[in-house]
Length: 444
Length: 121
Image (cartoon, rainbow over all chains, first blue to last red; front, side, top):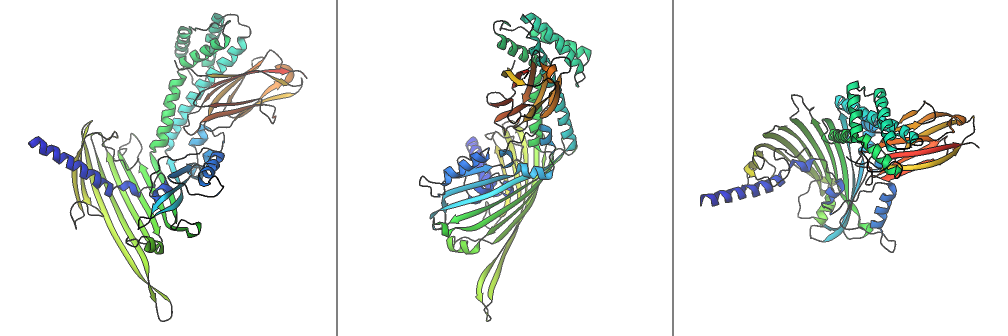
């Protein structure tokens, strides 16, 4: 009986935690990954990502034109397009890493487009709607980390240059060589010479070790005279393997994108989106009833410093709603014309536990026409509402599968008790979510 | 041992006069490539190039025999690039001597081999 009650209690806690999390989720105030889909209120089954201007043009025309050449609004459609990367620029890695703010703005800029034929009005009528938006981000990369990465890239390039230098000479030598053994011996000699000249400054001991390793590995299936191309391929790859070019490359690739994705330092996400609805499904009835703008600055402290466990996130979201539209098509909804949400979150993550504090202030206002005065001037009444939400969250990882979470604070909405916005929830997570349970998740 | 694929462009022929200056150029087209190229010419004055670059190989008469070998080691770590595209030129011609392209799904780190014969007019 005791076990049954404990199980019931745990299930109840988990379900409440799930629904409560949805209601005061800080993530919904951050710049969305698809601003257009967000204002449309849809979750498309697939997002098109054309990689060239031709592909972008084809995606738009094939979805927005019917077989008679007329315009249509497709259902369940979403597209994200980055104009900067649609053109081949021959950009090098070093140029990519050293971009100034304006260049980053252009590189990270993406257009988003979404549409649906099932945008529901207040009376559940399905209508056509389309939305468009953009998103970009600016990152102030840490100089020391960028310098380390450039240094690693140079080491890799020097290894690759050794491979190229040796093989260009060996292909030349192969014209005169008459057997595979001579090729291998000459390659070993050329390898030693190129390592001595390399900017990686190998010691004689290292050079001897590399050359000996090459000689030991140079046992090829293909015969030099009978299968020249296959022999030369094996020679090249044996050299590549001896120099550990692939291992160095994989490490470099990981570092490159850890730095780009992990983003230690200060960065800002910007996004904007606008909704266009056709309430009576004719082009002439099109109206733009909603626009949203996001500004999300984030700061992560450097790794291996005293504060590297700390992250700070700010959010600013402004949303504008057309009052006339919502009065007509959503008469039962309480909608304000101007809505601003400003918030901040602080997160501290340690090995066994994490703590997060977040606070969001909300202010909404709108003007309602109230007729005219005796001079014929329009009169308005102003309606305002404001609120404040604060939450603290504590996660403790009991083991790899089990995490204890406690949330305390004051939310915008009533969660459990009527007329009471106090939040006090604790739960146990049983590791169904593959994500690290101590990862708060708002910084993803 | 991971095997990298070699793409071969053999026996390319270019006509150059004895006293004509010969320049070799490599131009990267796709983004975020890392390319280290070696040009082996007759004699000891071999050339090294990093990424897009242009070098002077010498007079036509000094490049006759037997062949000039170009070997590039290419890597492209970008997840946004589906294709590697590189052009090789001799002496600023409009059309490249070699227009290399390969899908990254086929090889993310190709080797490129070009052998060139510089013929008399």
